[in-house]
Length: 274
Image (cartoon, rainbow, N blue to C red; front, side):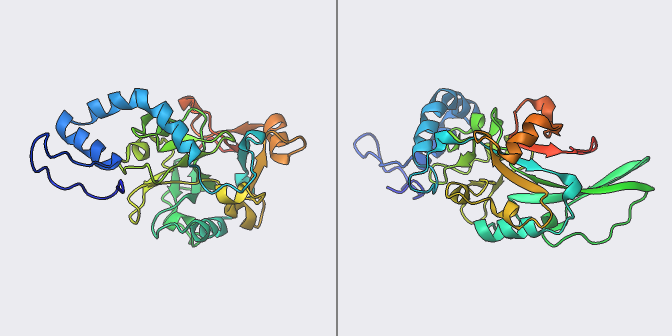
């Protein structure tokens, strides 16, 4: 039975058993047991096994790809970003992102002695129109953002069905067949990187274009960036430029105090960025 098929209403006692899909079962658990407390308590023990199964049904990796041979990382240099929106458009086209939602986006920061303005009209997809602020601006810059593919990510920890998982090569993914659309991960992500798709009603996020990188290609957003503000690399490969930058340059991550160990690193990150 398809997990997404609604269950028929109960028609009797034990003599008329229902055939429940996983999703319907979990929905019933929520209804009958009083809600999320029981749901989450059960998830604590069940999640690791489910996550392992989820990894087995991993997304479209290339045939022969060996994830244990790689450890992917992403590098952003805001000083190079010009806010053209090419990355957002490429991501949308490559991953069929629903209108109004974003797997990656660009924020514009305008700062001054008396204030800071942050905006991201349409995720920066169409570029940025001129902006007037109510203070004397002394600096303006753009910051590309996406899922940080954290090593200690809360989105995996709260998923009650193991739909969110981390691959051996360090990419955090969502198994759409397992996801029940509870949105716990959306709420748990401190970076606002996830959303519930209005089309699939499941959680979606940046995958670093897993279907591309396992074929030796770069993520679409990196591929189209005209200034090299976005870079993607393999920390297991000697001589990789991203690895070299992370090991030798002054890099930073977003919200380091949360200790989620993001694998998206930033060069020249301004202290105003949050």
